Image (spheres, one colour):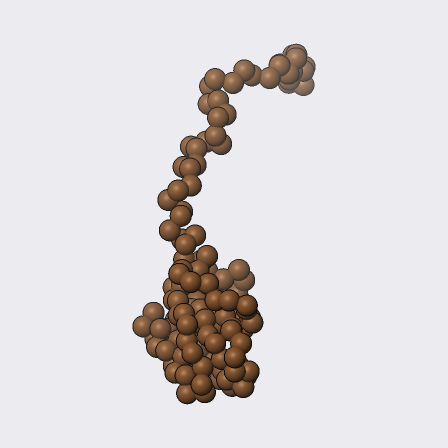
Amino acid sequence: MAKYEIVVIARQDISSAAAEALAEQFSGVLKELGSEIIKTEHWGLRSLAYKIKKNRKGHYFLLGVEAPAAAVHELDRLLKLNEDVLRHMTIRVEEIEEGQSAILTSRGERGDRPERGGRRGDRPERGDRPRRDYGDRSDDNQEDAA
């Protein structure tokens, strides 16, 4: 049997519990068809890169499975029929990574980033910068007024 990673994006207006129940439902279908579920991750409600069916966000989850091709085709068919699923992607992989995926580990590393500077880093404040020399502009303005 081949190994697959399946990422599913569900609609934003369903609850997190309903999204996890959806993942359990699809896992159950795969188990009935002779597959082994190696990994299940719920990535939570995340912003989409662009609107999909009037949704700006979606519940993401990942399934790592070892399954026959017929089971993957049946799951693909069911994902297309389900109204709560916005998008899905199935990829055949050599090995399914142990531990958390890169999405979940990057979420925890956000605190490691350096803090952003207040006003564009090391730029001096406005009062500390020398003014530009515009020459005799004040004389030009006086001639126009006369």
